[in-house]
Amino acid sequence: MSQADSHYAVFETAGDFCAIAWTEAGVARFQLPTKSAEAAERLLRRRLPDAEPSAPPPEIAATIAAATRYFAGERTDFSKVRIDLGGQGEFFRRIYAAAREIGWGQTTTYGALAKQLGAGREAARDVGEAMAKNPVPLIIPCHRVLAAGGKLGGFSAPGGATTKRRMLELEGAPAQPAAPLQAAFEF
Image (cartoon, rainbow, N blue to C red; front, side, top):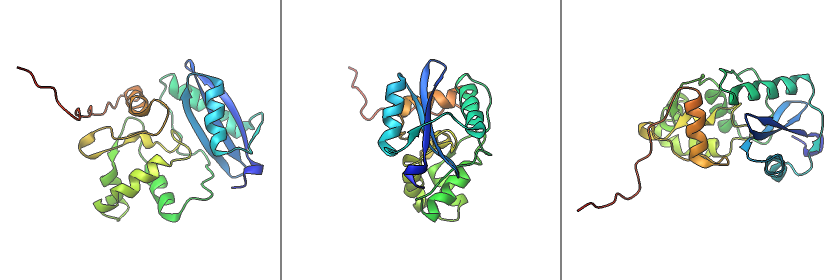
């Protein structure tokens, strides 16, 4: 993907702001909701500093409309949205393709996704790394990939695991809350 050929737009969804960047090949970046348009733009431009603000073409406008519906709680499918994964290695591309098959309200684990790809459970860390580096969260639904035992695990979007939990709850698939790192003693 050539950054010089990338464009972006910032848009509002259910009170928060997202940003989307695209090339001729498809959506290249997606910024999950932040509290301000400026924050969404800043976070997106951190990864694509040469992207130009532009009016979205029809295909991108349709993706923006779908994201707006998603964050309003409407069942939405992003599996057919064209994406630009330029710069991604073959294994990450396979991981992303498998993650795109996880439907609304469904979840899987890092280990199960690795096993599905024929890589074995030991590749769960690779799946976790791919999810953390996902350039188009929501479109590649990394929020639906959980840690072992159905625990939330990490989430690199603004708001971290709280955002991941909200997205899962929006879909009716709440994750098991993570156990506290240290329990308090009661006497």
